[in-house]
Image 1 (spheres, protein in one colour):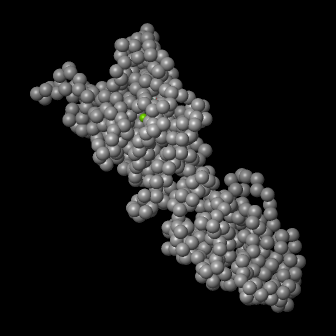
Image 2: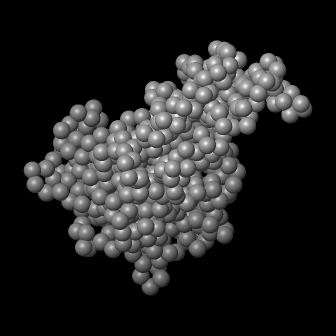
Image 3: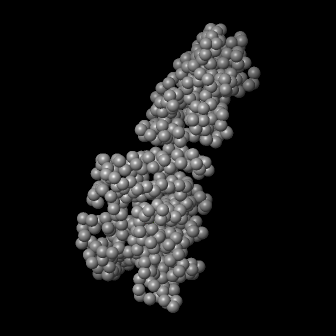
Amino acid sequence: MNTATETRPFEAEVAQVLRLVTHSLYSHREIFLRELVSNASDACDKLRFEAIGKAELLGDDAELHIDIEYDKGAKTVSVRDNGIGMNRDEVVANLGSIASSGTRRFLETLSGEQQADARLIGQFGVGFYSAFVVADKVTVLSRRAGAAEGEGVRWESDGKGEYSLAAEDIATRGTSVILHLKDDDAEFLDGWKLRDLIRKYSDHVAFPIRMLKQKDGKLTDEWETVNDASALWAKNKSEISDDEYKAFYKSLGHDFNDPLAWAHNRVEGSQRFTTLLYIPAQPPFDLMMGARDERKGVKLYIKRVFIMDAAEELLPNYLRFMRGVVDADDLPLNVSREILQHNRQVERIKGSCVKRVLDLIEKLASGEPEKFDTFRKAFGNTLKEGIVEDPSNRERIAKLLRYASTKGEGAEQNVSLDDYVGRMQPGQDAIWYVTADSYKAAAGSPQLEAFRAKGIEVLLMFDRVDEWIMGQFGEYEGKSFRNVAKGELPLDAADKQKQEAAAKEAEPLVKKLKDLLGDRVADVRVSARLTDSPSCLALSDYELAPHLARLLREAGQDVPESKPTLEINPAHALVKRVESGADEAKAKDLALLLLEQAEITAGAALPDPAAFVQRMNRLLAT
Ligand code: ADP
Ligand code: MG
């Protein structure tokens, strides 16, 4: 046996995570136990799964369990499992480095604010390293299932920057994590305290968590199971308390906080399965990372056997904030991800999950306004994507969306499409909206002026996905959606007449502006949208909103240049000055200013800001 001990530095990122975890988690230090138990339980799950095709891995040690011991004299607490174990390479990869690209980005999002960071860690579950919150030295002994006694590994670290690695004979399969507690954390050297924590955080871990029985204040050598050790979702709803649902949510990892709501359903019939799905109270960490990252959070079990994290197979992207468990009775245990992706039974389970989630959100919307508020603030923008992603549920999703509005309460996004439709003016046949990159920009759009004057409500949208979603929304309750900046405004007969007269009268002015602006514009015309502002941009139906074109270009995308159409308000003093005999140079400055201020309010990037400022100054100085 190779007895040499090797010392290695942690990857820089691990050192950073360790520092952060030990500093910001101290007030939650008891969760170390939950994290280590959760890893032990994962290890048992993995072994049970591998053993489906390879029963010899279990050998004569087929009862998977997790044992927790403490030693007052040595000041240690240890968590041992007879699960999958790790070989040397796995120990190095899993405990010495940070493998997932998600973790790297997690590190980039850290703010240095301890409070906020602690929450992130909770959602991210940098589990194993939480051991160093209570321990000044951690020893891990591990032997991979299927490996020989001499192929064990000892890993040890004080969590400061290095760890040591050595080969070691280990008699049985699995992993022991031994915590050498800091003096301040001696409270955990107590059988009742540990039992309490296990019941609080890990009661429904599906494997027995065992501790040695105590008698007359002394430890015996007899093991007893401390947790409930049954799969919570397999029980009857009526036998489960709210506290148990909440505790189980937390045991799934990735969130310290109580969930917002949950739905637990058993489907019987030709296909049988159970779903227990939770809405978190805050956006989970990976939600911030956008839709394209690997998704986690919904575990697939088949007849109580954990198969894999199958969030992508079991829920559509727009419900990626959900967490929970799906247990199917009728799928083969050796199912692969590829099979899951093309399996009709899985399709049906997915459809049922979507239905349950929408039911749950509808229940919040109709009966629990405060919770629904929390929901829409956290996940409203994600849910919106369902309009495009899931046309078969479009009506239901649309009813759950909320927007800011010219008749709403400031930036608060709480106006439903039903509110809007209920307030439509007689004869109004479209749902009007405007998109911009902030609430202020949306609410300040000059295109809203005519709508305000007529008392027509306009939805104010300022999320990046809005433009894309609205382009595909089609209609709601038979009403089409229309962008106030696009196309012609529908005018009644009297307005039309007025508009035509105004256009006729302004013909020479429009011609002059076209000449002055030359190829900076596609067209100039008299606006029906403006009452107070001198000018605005008008877009064709298929044109990208200027703020979005700018954002996309800034993100390095190739957006075709398109020339704007300028709309003017001939009644405005500034517009009149273009006509009123100003000299040619000044008229040109004024014309460009009309265009550029329209571009600025639309969120476009000015092609030449310096020239714009010079023009302004020339005009202000005369
Ligand atoms: P996570 O559990 O979210 O993957 P952790 O930091 O808790 O992150 O654990 C890191 C990795 O270390 C795990 O993914 C697993 O591969 C490995 N690991 C930790 N504890 C055990 C254990 N008891 N048995 C086997 N592998 C383990
Ligand atoms: Mg873990």
